[in-house]
Length: 358
Image (cartoon, rainbow, N blue to C red; front, top):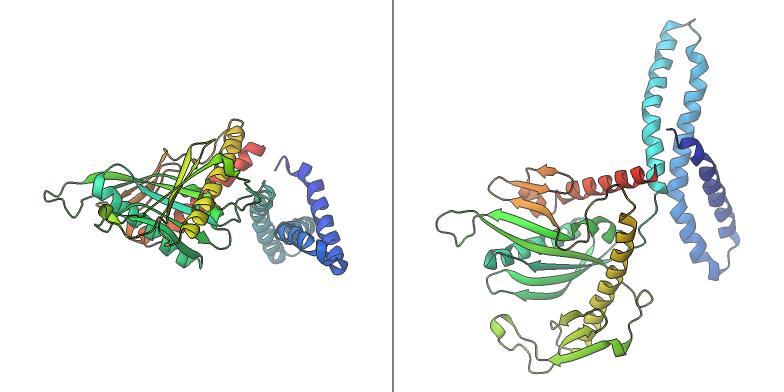
């Protein structure tokens, strides 16, 4: 690759730093050990990829003079085959290294808060919101992540007006961050007697979970209202004022929590969601600034963007951002095939970032 030569110096510096960290860890005091260990761990996959690439480059270099020796035609044919195989493989290894060198999204390793809301389409939209929520719950189970229900606002027909959950595990946000946006469904509702296909929608928001150190919230910026929580149809499910509504006055953000019987627990959950929404707003602002300088990017984060259509009669799921269609809707809804879409979105995002570097 034309720009590869310029990267060689950087690769040497990374490898030298990795070696230096290995030596430092052997004598590090407890105060520095965690920090050095994280840096060493972050660099390890890059250094491993550099080692594989450089071994392949060295092998190719060693084979080149052997090709000139025509004394043994059979041996020359074997060397030529190996040489061509390496020549084909090296660009992929170079790309692997470049991808590892791309700037990391600081939120990628965080847990996530999932919010699903029924959009246009009445009861069918709320049933679809419930289906999406359960799809992510199954997907979390497949990855061994912890899925903790935060709030459910049920319609009484098995649908959800809105629902939220905390998903905890390794690299959760990295895999789910492109799920934010409008998800559209086309299918014949159970209540439809004429067999007509209805179109409805639900909105998904995936927020990186924020810690107190990330976002400082001033108490004077909050208006906190407490009231009695209610179930479907407005029936009272609690005799005490345990439900909490927090309004963040500077931004106008409102968070409501009423699933816990304890006001204290509802307030803690509401603050957790508020903190994550504020953190996400900061990220969105930074991303928008960066996007202005990009040639292209995978759509994510814009809650009004229609990102995917689930067409049940045709058994297909289409992601509009990358024009990917899978004819396996049942496996997507069960969480099994969702990775096929997510992997394609991640690959497209990486390709765009590599283009931006050129």
